[in-house]
Length: 423
Picture 1 (cartoon, helix red, strand yellow):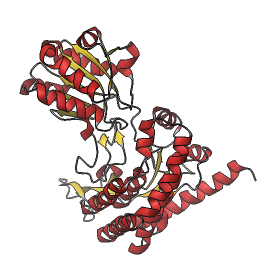
Picture 2 (cartoon, rainbow, N blue to C red):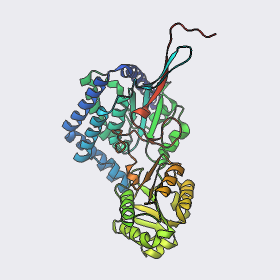
Picture 3 (cartoon, rainbow, N blue to C red):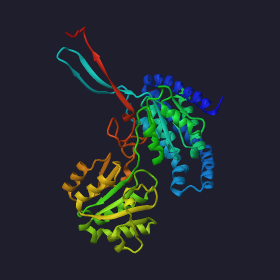
Picture 4 (cartoon, rainbow, N blue to C red):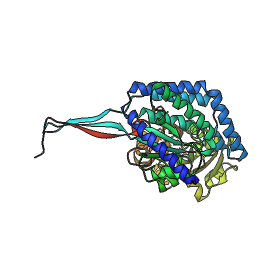
């Protein structure tokens, strides 16, 4: 028996077990799901030393491969990040249960009572790379929304994710739910990704990829089941002529440098030419002094000799690093045209004190998340009050923006009658 055959049998076993668990989760009471989530959080705290030890194994391998710093940052766990992971599970437990919510209800002239009711999607496959925190976020969100999850983390976070999965499954045990409700692919063989994209003989209902452009592009191209994803996070901050200069400087710094390796990090800063005198040099200096490489147009280069010339490619690049492209534009219309041409419909922000200009930007920029006077780093399910997120969706069907518990449900119609027949 070759390895591909072995993997196929293993993955089909995972799929069938998940489908069986999904039936139980769909009917599980809210309190039972919340008990599991609280037990998971407690287990992560108690197992901190073990999780960090396994994370160290992953980090040693990553450094031996000389992976870039932004990748290592996404992979790294510490006490603070583990606590955030545990709190995230508790916040998910505190959210309203979407399953069974009546979205709308009406009565037809013939007396039929029709309700649109939220129900779980079923079995969700999550394929991700270096972020071990996705393991807890995805598992917790799927559980609360009544879905079973099959998680396939990257080989670089294999040991960290395995330690976290053990905590999640222990929480399921304590609450009396099937531990197969959250499963992890037990090896890092790339064939397993292909098998998930095939749908595991109909046992997978949805795939969510979280990772680099090559991973997401492959999933979008090859998946035979629906996909929630974004290909790139080419996010912009536009500094309008009516921007407060100090606010603009602070927001640009945070949007780029708070965490450079996340999809909500700003990759391009656009400054209104009419505000160049008060905003251009201060923003560039602040970024450069913070250790950010700035690649700019002629005006940006003239403002500071440390600015490197931007190429046409820079305007469409997701750096995920301490690099930003910067240019002057002729007002909000020019800024929005640039965003439409080079952006990825992920997250874009305007800094302005002009309410009318802000409303125009919010209404006309066709991105999943559009902000006014706020950092693009708020593109996060936790910051939206979702407890956590399973990813950011930039498509326009079913879900868009941070994917939380509500977005992990679909709906059905319940129709109640009194013997009506159709003439």
